[in-house]
Amino acid sequence: MFEQAFRNIDDVLRKEAGCTTELDYTEQTSWLLFLKYLDGLEQDKADEAKLEGKKYSFILDKPYRWESWAAPKGKDGKLDHNAAMTGSDLSEFVNLKLFSYLHGFTQKATGPNTIEYKIGQIFGEIKNKIQSGYNLREIIDHIDELRFRSQTEKHELSHLYEAKIKNMGNAGRNGGEYYTPRPLIRAMVQVVKPKIGEKVYDGACGSAGFLCESFDYLKSKGNLTTKDLTTLQSCTFYGKEKKSLAYVIAIMNMILHGIEAPNIIHTNTLTENLADIQEKDRYEVVLANPPFGGKERKEVQQNFPVRTGETAFLFLQHFIKMLRAGGRGGVVIKNTFLSNSDNASVSLRKLLLESCNLHTVLDCPGGTFQGAGVKTVVLFFEKGAPTRKVWFYQLDPGRNMGKTNPLNDADLAEFIKLQKTFADSPKSWTVDAKSIDQTTFDLSVKNPNGGEVVTHRSPQEIMDEIAVLDAESAEVLGNIKALL
Image 1 (cartoon, rainbow, N blue to C red):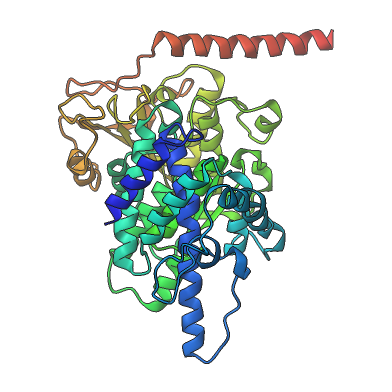
Image 2 (image 1 turned 135 degrees about the horizontal axis):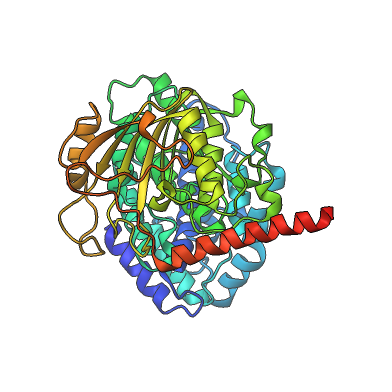
């Protein structure tokens, strides 16, 4: 039933002039799903209060509740077509009244981790792109058929929602940044091994894949007490996301996975000054795939000891700083990080090797990320002690990766097994930190078994590095001229 409803919604959205991409489909489905979910949550809480002889105070005023504007029901429990708005009446209500009312919750909320604040943020960031009130009515009717009150229903819906996010990731360059292949995330979670009572953080959370998979991993441990479940719900998973669409999708994704009020903040993580981070701000676990290739402004770069425009390098510094002593990290980064000779790359490798135990490097094949041509590695490290040995594993599924041949859990089974003991194999080997060049800190080493960690750069990457070096030289010359 859920799958058919999602198909029907997409079919209507394809007819809609305001929605042209998979990103639009997911965004527009998301805000409607959120309001339907919120209505169910409020109804459940009202029923619980009634059983306890208490009165429930609704978050939304009556005219703005799903049951009032979206799906008013008759005594028979079916849609009351006379009371249900459609056409221009529905469009005007949603665009002129509903969104501005919901956006107002940002000011009313007592803090950023409340459901009220999430409501305000979501509806301040996105717009209704469904221009036809008739199309909107049709979509609302499909959404209203969905039920996700039980864990089974939420579980099924979360799988379908993940599929939507994956399609969005496959849709092209812009979508790819929201989607990290779930088999890779699951492998990373299994290596980092978060525990109940630890805080898990992703400062570039995208669609919250790392947080959702960590939640599933911890929940699957079994024998969880009520206290454990409360801990998982309220004070385990923390995310930050800069982009509006990803922020909305992340919240909806976590809700569908069973986290009622996700601790996700809509902010540019990199604007935080590392010098201001205190012990109370830190986390035990960091799992992330930060955006790479982006460029940050000079004033943002001032927040970091290693100054660079490359967003992934800034995020790596942020993650190291955000970890508590003894905390564990798993971070995806471009494989050229291992060998780039520019000042920022060398300084950052030195920082990583000296402040953390970089115990594992997973080299991923080309095509691991759909719609993104870059090759990546995953860095696994523990903060608080310098690196002594680095275990490398070269992932080779034995086939060309692509949309029709995506990464799967079986591809990573050997890596997870061998990593537990840092075992040598035809695909894995260990490098002593003492053998790493202490001037370049170059980590691109040949597989002694005949393979090689491929870190050859494309012509474009070489041109990008030359541009960076030229900019650095120009800045130095400018400073010298200013002194003369």
